[in-house]
Length: 365
Image (tube, one colour):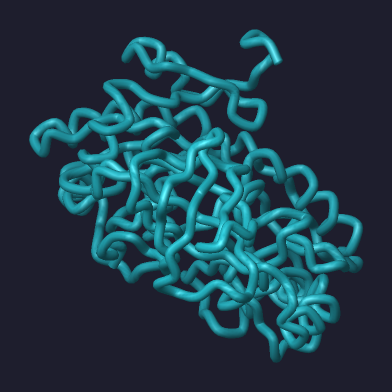
């Protein structure tokens, strides 16, 4: 896809002015890095970083019984949370494959706000629209809001400098205003650090970006691109749709069964997933802590000590925090934590140990 045909975020001009390296990300021209992935990654782990993730999808389901309707579609149980809380969930097909993983924000019994992945927003909206009973409206709001993620130990200080309240519980949100304009402040993120995701109106996103950049300067914060976002989430073992989850990789395989309301009466794909969970005969996701020299990448074979192929890497990267390679992989059920394995990296054997993520200490709360 040519750069001219790609969609752009409402702060695209800011990325260009900062000299960002841009790339196609799900049909959007987005910043991959500014000063370098390692520097941006370290800023988020130690201080604060700001990401533009406005390409993420947005949708609103509203009408009498919207909560119950969404709950009958997606995997997680909206009955577990109250208004003002957010919840990770998955939209599955009838065979249990993951069409998308997303965050659902419960506004009230009659309103549920959704943030799907950029590439899957339209399909999630389509599926919900086709299933919605009379009186339930599904609204595609993909470009109604921008999304700016403020992540890192100093994120509270950055928001406080803008006059925004902080300290709300993890996986909660509040609707407020900034500069007289509506703003949704969410205590969510994809880095493993304490942080927030801010949703201003699309045309207000540039002004908020400028204010956040100025507010983070005293803390030596940095604008961070999607390259650092990927290394940060991989260190945590967070799934990425298309890698650890897909229409071929179910929640059971991806170890996201904790986000499935198994006792619910119904949700898309329930019967298939329940049968798969009971059978215990599919590969499942593990972490690989690299002990040799080399950086695994998606698609690399994973072999047991005797040379038998037992799995495939789904995500692999250099961990700036640990100074070595880490990976996520789908492995046969014979694999266990602590097992020594070998990753075939372009024909070269790289040793690793099976580990349950995260690879680093969690600081998200």
